[in-house]
Length: 179
Image 1 (cartoon, rainbow, N blue to C red):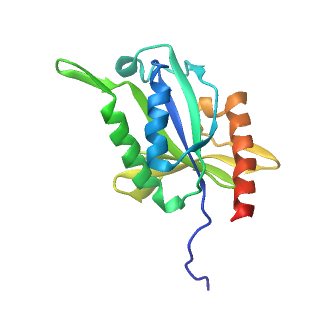
Image 2 (tube, rainbow, N blue to C red):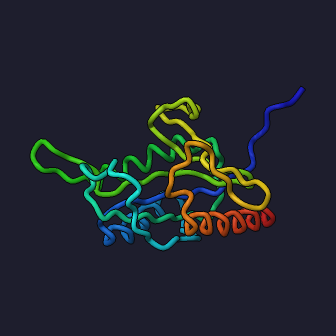
């Protein structure tokens, strides 16, 4: 019989999506105030995966990833998602009755074997975490690299994204040795 114990801390990151590149520094500073200093930041890459966000956010979107120095409990992911939604709310645009996000902030975490994303949308491959938030394993680390699952988002398969997460995994494993 097993006994419950606290999980190993994980590496928190956020995926940012916006067409307003000038928002990145301000949002990154606000995220650092919430989660501690950033320790890894990807380049911003053109994002044209689908037209899902176009009506709300416009076209010519940019994707960027940011991770934070202090590992966190994976049990905090739902609370973290709620905090990032509050931050998104502060950057909304309004035109009369219409409103939408200027930036999308999606948190997730990395551990030695997987990448987990937070979502407000339930699906057959997502598990409920609490407070209206679901978790989704989106990449598995196997045989020395990240491997996709059937539902993995295309931008998580870009070579630049995989390189970022591979480097982030090495950083995280090094941080665990120091704890």
